[in-house]
Amino acid sequence: MTPQLQQAIKLLQLTNLELQEYVESQLLENPFLERDERSSQPERGDGASKREKDGSDPHDGEKPISLSDQASGKDAASTLDTDYDNIDPGASRADKYEAMKADSGGSDWASVKPSRAYDLSDMDMDANLTREKTLHEHLTEQLHLSVRDETRLMIGSYLIDLIDEGGYFRDDTSDVAVRLGTTDLEVEQVLEIIQGFEPAGVGARNLSECLRLQLKELNRLDPRMDVFLENLHLLGAADLQGLKKATGFREDELQNLIAEVRALTPKPGLAYGFETVQVVVPDVFVGQADDGGWKIELNSETLPRVIANQKYFAKLTSSCAHDEEKSYITEQMSNASWLVKSLDQRARTILKVSSEIVRQQDAFFVHGVKYLKPLNLKAVADAIGMHESTVSRVTSGKYMATSRGTFELKYFFTSAIAATTGNVTHSAESVRHRIKELIEAEKAQAILSDDRIVELLKVENIDIARRTVAKYREAMHIPSSVQRRRLKQRAI
Image (cartoon, rainbow, N blue to C red; front, top):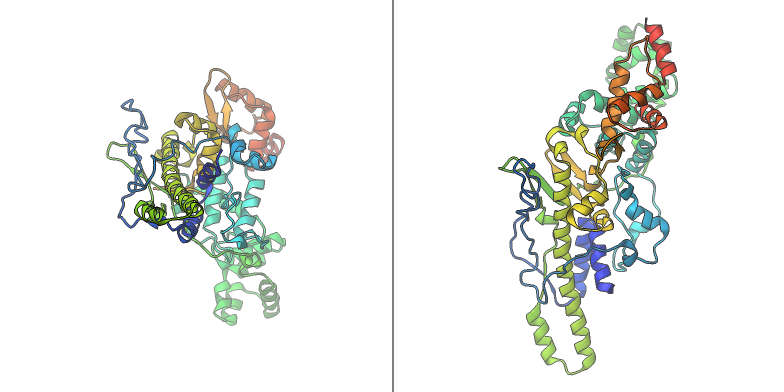
């Protein structure tokens, strides 16, 4: 592979901000590269998810992208698709694993940070310096250690994005439930999990809740403290007499409680580093189409528009007297033309991959997060005739704006559970949901063991191991059969 082709392929993994930075640097360096000032409309993948009601090809109607109508040279590169080893043969095994790990159907729900694997010496190297871990990163790490359910991971990631630098959750759980197409209870349960993370008090919706969480961690949330916190507004108003009357506590008791509360941290998130807040700019827009399907549009604001100036190249070439000068000019023109073609192909590839994801995950867009279907890189790659590594690059750091919110493309990949017969698979989330339903319906006299759940699921054509049932049950914070039996006997 030529260095130019390697560079073109690596452009796929840049985020829109990184790409803009790189293109700006090239505009400064290359005399033949110019900004294309012509107006443009967002490119579309109309009909990319015509819901198979008419049997039409989901890729029919995708409009070609033309970011280089006036560019010189040949047509756009036919493909940027290749295997990871061809691009970076010197990469470590860990790097190759990261690029290909979703092949097995595993999910990566972490908020993927911009990749720095490419070698562009003119880029800002400050981003590579050691820095303090941010609150967002700290919470995301704990989320992945605490939760295995794909649905809850998506909800948790969404909630963490809404937590401010002070550690407070500043949205409404009901609104989040509507946006994600799930229940208020599910969102509340995931928020409760996050509120159990470090630092203590994180994820609170107000100061009172923040203090309660910290006191609970210290095992100091007793009834007296609870009464005191219910009247915390009086302390804020410096109305000590009103506080004394509302609680019925003696003055010395109040002073002790006040001192204990003042020793807590009102903004626990500030203990961690934070980055300058940057609004996520989506690469793709998904909206309802007139035919009942979906229309997929590229965000033209994120597409650097450049052209190669052929006239200037011809003028300089004709005036060059030395071979070295001609060679340099020709090389710069070649680089400019190649960048234009690479940007064109990058946009085409993002649109193609996004359209296939929307087609595969149609039920999510219609019904919500519980209807995510099993999906891995290979399924998308096979459907559009690309290599898995190409799809992996495209889905990292690229965002899709939908009526349910803005999501990284990687969010739409979930693992699968095999069926006992045939080639049918079940999403891991739907299996977890079924396990939860079975346990919630059990009677005190007939508590289901994990082995019994395996048997019941096999009757429903779900092939799953007992240890997997146990893992899913624990991830949903459901006690073992022994513990559940004791709890229900006590209730009786």
